[in-house]
Length: 241
Image 1 (cartoon, rainbow, N blue to C red):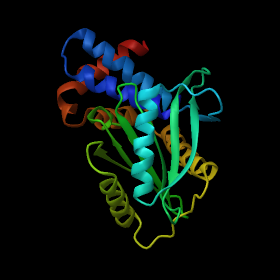
Image 2 (image 1 turned 60 degrees about the vertical axis):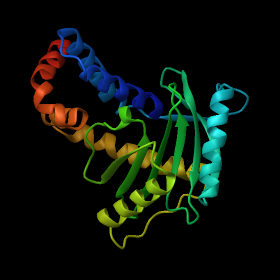
Image 3 (image 1 turned 45 degrees about the vertical axis):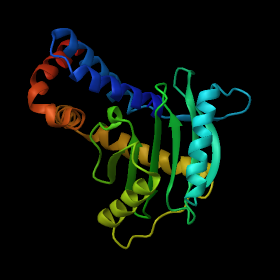
């Protein structure tokens, strides 16, 4: 995967393309989904922020506001890191954080549109993952997930407390009474996310391609699957040929 922020930007593009119904629209949507699926098989690299901070004043203000929200809710701020694409391009800055008992960690960033994006993660000792994504409407979609990854989305307009409540509810739903791993440092939080990403990549590589593509289309298109899936599959086949 190139970077989490880049993947989310591609998802937004997918949702925009769905609004049309022309041959060009299907080609564009097919290109976005193909790229999104390719990114899901690439690792993410995090680098120390250092002096290479690409944020402007507006982005710094947004980070300060989210930092304050997290600290007011009892979260501990961890390191700010650069996300680097496999091409070497810097995609953006993310701030890592954790809750008081270190069983919920996560990162947030600010998209190029100025909207915030926050992901929270937990992992059981047996390798069950819970992720809650809070962001703009265009980031609601994602690719198909393996059975051991529970992924939820809520709107960025909701409060941090709603994200935390949703996260705890999902943990109790998928693994009641489980022991949850602790991630006290940014390095441990990044390692947890890497384990989740590795689990997703391994699962995707093990799936029959036709079944995985259909599952991805269901996940990305949602209620629009019946309307767009057949023509989109044709466009994907044409692009691959």
